[in-house]
Length: 293
Ligand SMILES: Cc1cc2nc3c(=O)[nH]c(=O)nc-3n(C[C@H](O)[C@H](O)[C@H](O)COP(=O)(O)OP(=O)(O)OC[C@H]3O[C@@H](n4cnc5c(N)ncnc54)[C@H](O)[C@@H]3O)c2cc1C
Image (tube, rainbow, N blue to C red; front, top):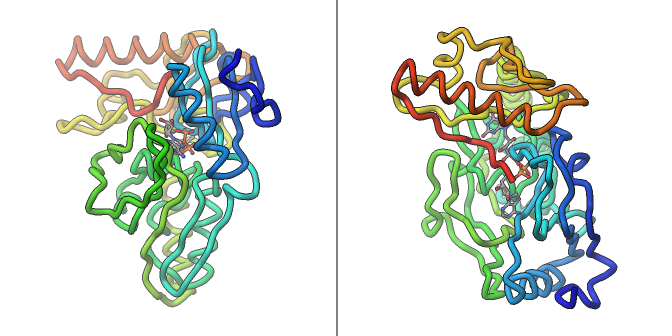
């Protein structure tokens, strides 16, 4: 295919996506592109857009379920040293989009920089976390973002200040672009109490949810205004419900966990079943939080 001529070192065909996602399920990407830096990313995206191919960006895949038939398009993954760069300057930290977010949270806490500890225990890359405006009961990443560096489909890379980003509940509004880095504005704090708060938030999260080591994608549905989705599903007795290798978690009903031999379709069937039950019995239309590719 001419679109990737010359990009062979960073472009693979029929690349399995399961090992690149938290669920560990699903088929292959027709193309997997791993640009080594911003210019390579810009060049690859320009060609993908010119060739009118469908494309997605993949972080740690902690919020993505890939269908069994795979993704018939281009998956871009920001992997490698240039995408893991993190720079601290006083209370400002800038991290490239592929940097591991939980590690960044820990590093900030150990430096006595407060702000990110509210997101303790949320897996993902900096890019994925910002794109999803990840968060929980103690706040969202938008609370500490200063600016985001973005490559758009016209090939322009520019910083977008926080005021120019339409953050909302589990969305940044940054669609159709690639986040290449983010800058966070943190606050000085004493390390010991900060570390304690980080640990307390982490423990609280892990007592209430599936451990990070399980195959899941975090919460399946967004919380509707009426009631948390997990509570709705629990009240309808859906905990423990199964389809093939997929089960609604007994710990948190908004999590669907999978066995290694599950099919992505098992998870999709269970999602549909849960959604139908909630719609039928409460009239509430649940919306997906996860992305299904
Ligand atoms: C055990 C567990 C617990 C979780 N707990 C929480 C929680 O408490 N709160 C919460 O909000 N989420 C939670 N999640 C979901 C997940 O951690 C977040 O959604 C996180 O933001 C995903 O980051 P990622 O890098 O894995 O992104 P991916 O899952 O790879 O991608 C998510 C979305 O972001 C896009 N994306 C990724 N990188 C980029 C980029 N560089 N530029 C543009 N778009 C990009 C993808 O295309 C996709 O649309 C949990 C998940 C698990 C498995």
